[in-house]
Length: 227
Image 1 (spheres, rainbow, N blue to C red):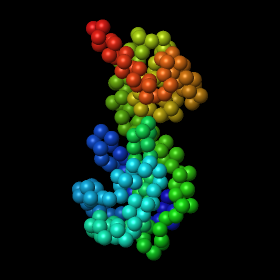
Image 2 (tube, rainbow, N blue to C red):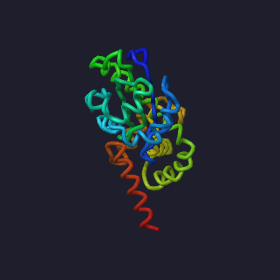
Image 3 (cartoon, helix red, strand yellow):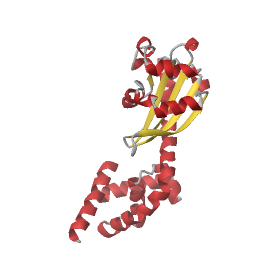
């Protein structure tokens, strides 16, 4: 990414939605002390990160705050300037509406600001990065989720007409597993996953993953009332 964008500093975080904070950092050409300082203090006064995250597409820092205003902040002078980060661009990626992580790329002052052509290059890279972050998110929680899948599969088998394979696919979808990862987990081809998902939606009379989650929650509620 640094070569592609003629940049100097790269930082990437994963987003922990449960704790509402960034963690698991990877960085190039940035001091560890400065990274710790961001986590300990500067993230609370950072004027860029949250507004850039909310835009949900690659964003140049000066689209949020003009350079002259940024240069007057404590965040710029005591944090960014330490690693000669002057011009920045951020990419935040999402899976099922939830942020999974980001790329923060910075240039030294003499290289000049990023432009529209470089934003377009980031948009081309964004889907592959989003897919990688979704797989990472799944891998991080797959062990914990595996114990939760059996009750869901059992519920779907008892209360619906789903086949064992369809119930397994549905449970993996509800755990946040990306479709390509579902194929790996079940040792089937990607089109087979799509076929099972289509059957799940038809049999449960839902149109998307959100409605599927609501349907399963409804089944749990009905079961609780019966007991």
